[in-house]
Image (cartoon, rainbow, N blue to C red; front, top):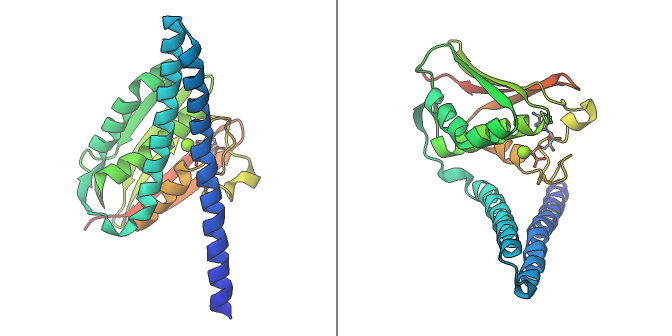
Length: 226
Ligand code: ADP
Ligand code: MG
């Protein structure tokens, strides 16, 4: 009976997830359809360019989201190898360069030793770092500083992502790993869920400390490579 209960809970969780996905995909599709109808009516080239740009952005949104879900569908094929963290962090920073500048966000990166490694798949780790830094940027509408620091003990590797943003109200801390939990007008609420999944698949842990209007520190903890 316990098993049945578990199964029905699982099924209803899948139902919620599917409804969420359907909703998230339908939204940008509806927008795209609308813009295409507009486009067919407009003579004005500038106006057309504007709509093409919006269509492009909406397609990117769908693409990005489907990418997040791919991670969930194949958690067992990760190919891990000892990988230095600093180069991954630098690549993510490069990807976000223009976003950082236009949002007046500065980065401080500190690595206790330059060659700290963890056992991971680089692309998945990139996806996590990207999600965390993006969230920090979005939490600082006036700009500010994001500090990333990496440290090690005999047994563990720590990566801290600290921002000076709006913070997370206590009642939301429990919801961070739920799919589709978002407080943003344009958010999809998938970034942290996917990040938790990836980190746990790497035998890691995520700790969140936050104070409203002061900032948030997210710490990733991995087993050290011996
Ligand atoms: P999204 O960014 O699309 O909203 P996420 O899963 O990345 O989805 O984050 C879920 C929610 O967690 C955000 O909407 C926000 O409320 C909160 N959050 C995550 N990171 C931060 C942060 N660094 N500062 C403040 N709030 C955050
Ligand atoms: Mg996010």
